[in-house]
Length: 226
Ligand SMILES: [Mg+2]
View 1 (spheres, rainbow, N blue to C red):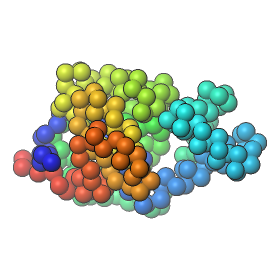
View 2 (cartoon, helix red, strand yellow):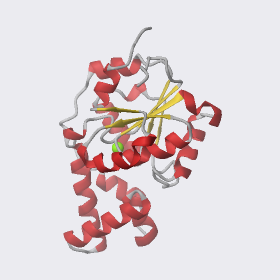
View 3 (cartoon, rainbow, N blue to C red):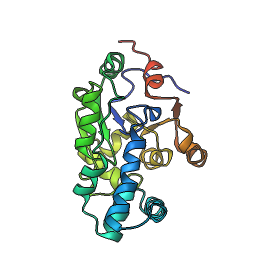
View 4 (tube, helix red, strand yellow):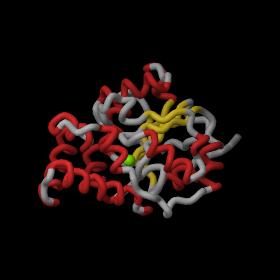
């Protein structure tokens, strides 16, 4: 693999959940539980039925929310507020992470299927909210989630990245299948490893340029020659 330098890219695009913080922190597990709870209470179904709805919507639309909106008329703002209504005592200010991110030359962005307020909450708890120039959330992509290719067009447009500059951009993400559209657009791609996505990685590895154990190991492997 070609070495990455701190000025290798003009645009560094990061997913949020399970990428910015380690999947093992358990943050997403709490959100995931809230998603199931929301479906149980809103659709008045059993836990087993809720899990089935969830898995079907995720498979069909790439994001549970998008499926719930299209097939069940769910109000997105209410859903997003509900599922992200959890505290995160496990997240800490991390000076090294902040420094490494700040040492990257270029523009830094968050591109997430979650909400902007959730992103801001997580980033500020970790002390890295000022690092990122812009957050593109699910509302801003008109509820078209990754890996829908239309979502990536909105992303490039929103971040001001012209199609002939995608080769100077890198996308870092834990959901392996979300890297494919980015790679097809010409971006370099980094998969943040996790067991949940290992099978998915196997099917999408040809769209993945780099893989790292976690965000910290990715950042620590970069050559900060400047
Ligand atoms: Mg993620």
